[in-house]
Image 1 (tube, rainbow, N blue to C red):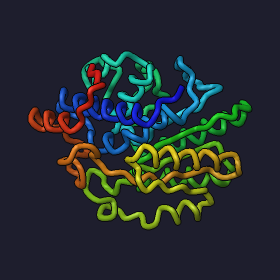
Image 2 (cartoon, helix red, strand yellow):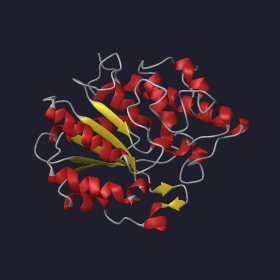
Image 3 (cartoon, rainbow, N blue to C red):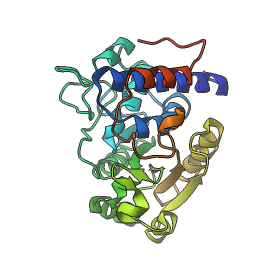
Length: 283
């Protein structure tokens, strides 16, 4: 049975607590983008995707997700752990020596839920397209989901992939762009303005769904359900997810400063106080 909205909101708070504690413990990591995508990944894994309880690298007979902007690994690891892929207590090893939970996800340690290494930006969409075509060859009608950053789309390989996906009618793919308008060096418009992304994807012959409230669980469910309804119709689907970097922690929002910086002790306490829940079960 799928969790209800309140349960999804409670899990979102828990995941935010995980993110904050993970990066604080090693004074390293990327909390901003992780917090901004928390609602999305919670909805994806707990409500939207058709998943098997046991992890299988091939992912036959189930939906598959690829994280392209791998620096937001804290949210990815937390959601994977709290979806049963590995013990929640393992989150305490984040970014430590010999941990399976490295700063960017890798496959060589065999961490359940991780199907590609995504330390270098710009590659995830290409991998997702390959997996989507493999599903077609296997007569597997499940979907491939991918998440990229908006700043990441400044990488040229993405646009080769976007052109290829529409030309080859890869219509079992939903690629979501975390549209928060920020990257490590500042606003995306200041670093390298990409103009009207919706118009660009439409020009590349994709169907496009826009989710204006990308940190609202009900809006995400509605938007992603609509995106899913567009699959299988000859075009790949792009979701433009408008999020706020650092969402849920007041001093991390509306700035790019927390893209890759960990909170100190006092800042952690303040952030956890803003994300209190009677249901929390910290690792």
